[in-house]
Length: 197
Image (tube, rainbow, N blue to C red; front, side, top):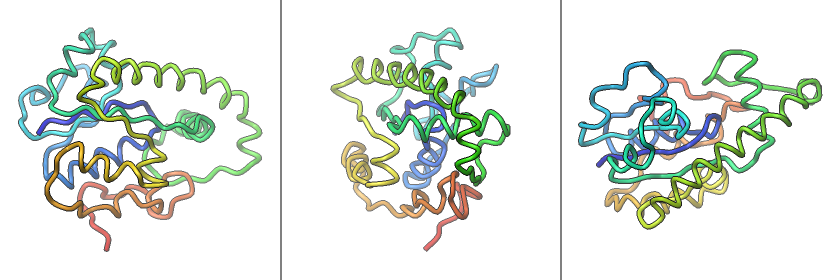
């Protein structure tokens, strides 16, 4: 089973990738097109979950639809709350740290509000790219959101059905809000190997 999570930065995609690879007991590749050399197993491994940004496929000089056609399942994943996504993006850009727990207060948000507001446009552009992928594959792709996966949890069962996975999911704790980066308590440490009960 070859699965591509087509998403954008700060969407919870790293946790989504780790969780799904753990559930399906398969290999995972995080943002393969962000490196100069594309991992050789990207298009050959039969059991793989990949987190991909459409913009990075374009930057690698590859055709988007043809590249994504090499996967059995496409999950188009967006974080709909632009304010939260922008705060996370600005904080990550400022600190250089991507996957550790952090806090920001109202003063920090106020001081960075202009950057936060201007970041929303790039997120909307990324959403449009993901929507274009979904439109190209709508009969075979699934749309999910950060909110549906982590907050109201409605997308979890949809993912289960879409993948036609016969076993119950076992690692749902990997999606718990305690792993949330902003204001979480444990973050994503050892995400690919820890099962909390």
